Length: 463
Image (cartoon, rainbow, N blue to C red; front, side, top):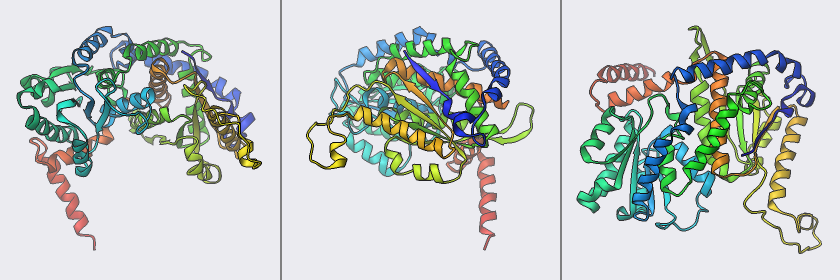
């Protein structure tokens, strides 16, 4: 497993003093980075959060692999019902290993497709049901709390759809991924006889891709989850090292924190130059936004901190966003995700037409072109004083993807410590959820229904 981090285009010597960080400034901050490392390590050891331990929980992998073996060949579609961290990880793994839709090819029992119901748009849900055969669909309902309104409502619809076709066999077509022993989904799953996989209580949704949240759907669509965890384990080992040359997660965290806070870059663009990593960019967007967007720090001071993450795709978004990035507000830092070795080179035919635009490319390859385009875009941004850095994966396979996602999680945790915030809570999300539950009539949320009514009254008073 080989992953590299190149921060040179974040340096003042390259990006300019106004937008880049000097080596001396970074060196002065090394003690703070090491303090962040020790703080994350201490909290991990104390059980405050558990994502660093996930690659080593081998019993979970055995139970998932056993289940996947039991049901293999009985379905051509895996329908995941979840939202946020209960859906994005599975999508990122599917895109990363099998390729983005719609280029995965025909789906069969040997090559099942993944359908993710991660929204309550009724037209979307109806179209998804019409696209699936209930006799060939395996359903995974995923919710850590067991009561997420979007997930519960969609599952009730899918469950009814299954029951109409499968009758008493429905329970054999459903598995639940939720907190073991807690919540309404667990209670229903136990009563109905669904297979249940537990989500560790010390792992939040956005950090849960290497729990059954991501591993169960991954195993069911044929991804080698042992290799995913092998890569994540290797990255975990590196992420505990005090040497920043080895610990790329800590080094990336330090430089991102410095350029964000010292050079006023409140926006980060994750810019993968691989369609296979496009799903990972959206997964990262949630990880970074929910973890680092916080109102108060650990001292109780109001800070309203956060760096807005944007997902782009190279080379596609060179033609839709880079104009803004180069000539618009200089308030962004760019993280290019590169792939050294593609599965295919994309050989361009050698025939020439005596036309410069065609003949220059003849006999070359798409692999070379996408690499040149990325390096050219990085150079152009640097010329305009737009700081950027590059993470390079040797290839996109299970081992590298597992390592990369674990690196991103460690990097996020380290930046949280550098900001002196709790990267593992999400109070800002909760009020909207409470309003929703109150308006939908859930018991115990009456006060939020009344609070929402007061909000509506205030709106109505505006003429």
